[in-house]
Each structure stands twice: as C-alpha cells, then as structure tokens.
Length: 427
Ligand code: ADP
Image (cartoon, rainbow, N blue to C red; front, top):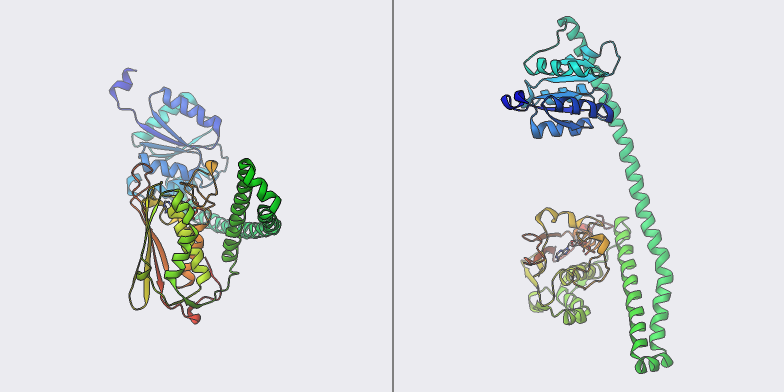
C-alpha cells in the first residue's frame, strides 16, 4: 500500500485469449499495484496499446488472429513503442520460440504455467530496461526464419480472405435471388387479393352496408389500404431487386419533368392535407422537355417526396426547386424535417440502411417517421446514376426537436443520350 502511494501505478497491457490465464495474471498484477488492461485478440491488443500507450506489454504467442511476434513487429514500427518492453508469456514448447520472439522485437520471454511469486520480479526487471540475452548469430538466423514464417502466414491469410470473400459474394447473390423470388411469389397472390378487396369495396350490397354501418366501412377501407401498402412494399422490393440484378432496361423518351413532379405531388395530396404540410412548387422553374426514362424518374421523385413527407412533422414545409443551365437540371427536395446526421449522408444510399429503430418499424409512406425498408434512396441513386446524374444529401444533423431539415440535391443531364446509357441499371 505504501509502495503504491510512492510510485505512480504503471500500466500493463496483457494480450491473452485464454480466460483462465487472463484472470490469473490480471489478479496477480493488480494485487501488486499495477494497472492492468486486457485484450483477447492480437488486433484488439494493438488498438488498445495505441490508445493507452502502456508501460509494458505482456503477450501470449499463439492468438487467434495475429500472433505475439507479429504484434511486437507491428508495434515496433511505431515510434511510440520503440522502447516499450514487450514480453512474451507462452506455453509454446517450440525449441526456437525464444529466438523467434526476440527476432520479432520481443524483449523477454516467460513460460507458462505462470509462477505467481516470480512474475512481479520479472515484470520489474523488464520495466527497468532488462532484456533477455541471445547469441547474435542465432538472432540473425532467427530473423531469417521469422521473415519466412511471416511471408508464409501472409500468403495463407490472403488465400483465406479470398475464399471468405468469394463465400460472402455467393451469399450476397443468394440473398438477392431469395429476395427477388420471395417478392415475386408474394406479388402474384397479393395482386389477386388486392383486386378482390377493390371489387368487394365496389360490390353494391357491401357498399350499402358500408353507408349504413360506419364500423363495416372502417374495416373494409382499412383492409384495402393495408393490402395496398403491402402491394407497394412488394413492388418496391421487386424494383430494387431488378435494379440490383441489372434487369431493368431504360427507355429514353421525351420527358416533361415539371409535369411529372406535379403528378407525383397530386398522388400525395391526401397525406399532405392530413399532415397539414405546405408544399412549395413552381412548375414554371422545371424543364419541360428532357430526354430521360420518365417511369424511372417518377419512381425516384416519388421516393424523395415520400421521404420528405415521412420525416417532416405535421405543419412542416417541403420545397421543390429546379434550376437549369444549358445541359443540366439541378433539382432539390428540401424539407423542414428531423434531418440526417452527417455521418449517415452516404450510408443512407446503401441498400436496407434505415436510421429508424427497426423494432418500431411501420411501412407507412406518409406517417411522420413512418420508416420503410431502406430501399428508397438506393433506388433513387441507381436510377439517377443510370441517367448519368448524381444525387447527394445536405443536412446539418438529425434532431427530432429542432428539426434542422434535409435537402436532397439531384443533378441530371437534360438529355440522356441513348448511347451514354449503360445497357442496364447498375448500383
Ligand atoms: P426508408 O424506406 O427507410 O425510408 P430510404 O432509403 O428512403 O429508406 O431512406 C433511408 C434512411 O434515410 C431512412 O430510414 C431515413 O432515416 C433517412 N432519410 C431519408 N430521407 C430523409 C429525410 N428527408 N429526412 C430525414 N431522414 C431521411
């Protein structure tokens, strides 16, 4: 205790994958007054060492990722660790283990099982500059062997990574196919169910019942709307999966972007009214004669407007503006909604990336913070890139109280030339 007060506690980083050894050494060193940090894997150990700059590093040799020697070599290449004692503590019984360890930049070598009484003495020895002795000739030979060992391990690791990468790629393809097949399989019966509910709604006896009994009217309308929403979600997944698997051909034709945006806004009339939102849109600013795929642009604009509605609280404002130079139109969809963190500005364009809490998920296209499946923006980017354009977002951050707003900026060529169009859309 007195000793602890006199000398500042020194920090030892212990890298060890075996839980029992970790506990034993941690307790022992802690008991005699050291500050002990532990890491279970080599890479975690290196990260922790860089963050905390310990006074001494004690490491096992056989670890699941980088071994103790590679940890030492990596740290020694960083000027902050030139003089840090690095000590191996290992059960390895390889005859040349000590020489290899020294060749890799390790100062001392202790063997397991840990001798608790002696551990502190050894640690103090290394902390005060002590170093294991080794014959220089043997050290030179060990360096060569170590170099060969590292190269062989590196090649093995690269091969493993390539295999893993291939497996992930295959899995990703399987996932795409699965999504596509599932969406297809669901869409056919759902289209029928959707059709039947619409027929039901229009069926004269039922219409009479609906006018007489508001309860029945609510049930039937709820049913139709819910199925309509399911239909839209499946359509969204199908469009996305076609885009992902490059199966959408573009049809370039004369396109009136202003009229297209107006139609999209009309589609959201009810939601805009219900949510008391104000939309600022002047069709005169927008190009009337572009050459583009208007079906695809409609999907992109619909997604942007739907998001602006979803992520803006009631009474908010949505601004749709356009500017043109001779060759491009730059249009923006800006809202007074909750905004998007700067760190998320790129990620939101990745498939299935949604910032909402998935456990509170709803698929409403217009309810405040309704959330979706995270496909809208990747679809937009896919469509806009296929036209030779760009899309980005600007927003100071996400704040549900202050609502700093978001602005999606799209730049599109006024004329998407048929020959400049990639044959298929690619994300
Ligand atoms: P989703 O179906 O989840 O809406 P999107 O791809 O359209 O998927 O959007 C991805 C995420 O980006 C959303 O979950 C949301 O968090 C965020 N986001 C998109 N548009 C806006 C916006 N106008 N305001 C705030 N956040 C937005």
